[in-house]
Image (cartoon, rainbow, N blue to C red):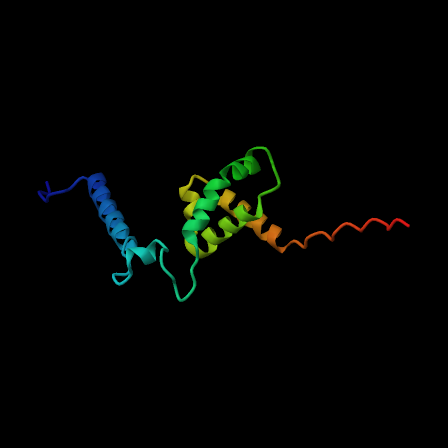
Length: 134
């Protein structure tokens, strides 16, 4: 008989997978050592432009009912403030924030698409003025 020491295959594979996952997680969490917490939280100006991330997040909180009705009842209207908040958060601040708030990636895409279309839509012309009385 061969007297070499043999390790069970499954525990060895599990150990290798765990060590690989730990290494990837540690690498993914590395942040710029020179950035401040204020910069990471979007509290300070970035290259001269203030993105207003926190104001947009509060605006999104105030229009949560609109967003819920948009998905549950098929309401096809979100106010301009709500769309502005969605655009700012997704484009300028935290692209994955809607996922953190419980919306799926598909729902985030629908909201972004709706708000982009609503912004680019041309407003209807004003109604004609009534005829002048003589």
